[in-house]
Image 1 (cartoon, rainbow, N blue to C red):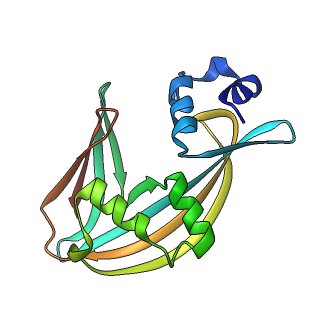
Image 2: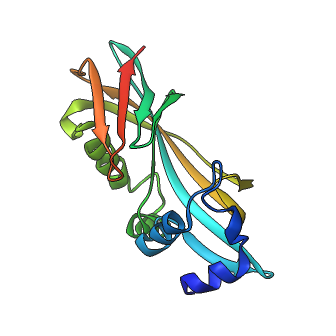
Length: 176
């Protein structure tokens, strides 16, 4: 499938309006393999695998408190760390079962919080769920979200964590 195939089947005028991604963001996601796209019964479907991590320590539970984007600050308040799996991680996970091969967990902790394996006392796989829905971010596309949930315990936690994203956004986490 080519990106032009997607453009033919979506309401392009709705992209970049309100909460909707821009067509450029959609193309970047397509090109980077962050999500798999396919045509089903004449409609575009998007499938994404997401790792959600609930992190705890003696300081409490780690929350993503807010995000400062190049445009404006955005309050989040999530009680977890969340990140899309990369296409090669999904392929490897499909072959070996996602909760047995958890290398993606270490990539996410390292990239988002600069935490390595030695900082984690314990990790437990909680659940794998699947949700299909339309999203305000992707007009005209049915989205499937495959969610892998983990609980981890962090030794020697920092007071606060911050991460700078590729788009220039800064994401802040704190203990509560």
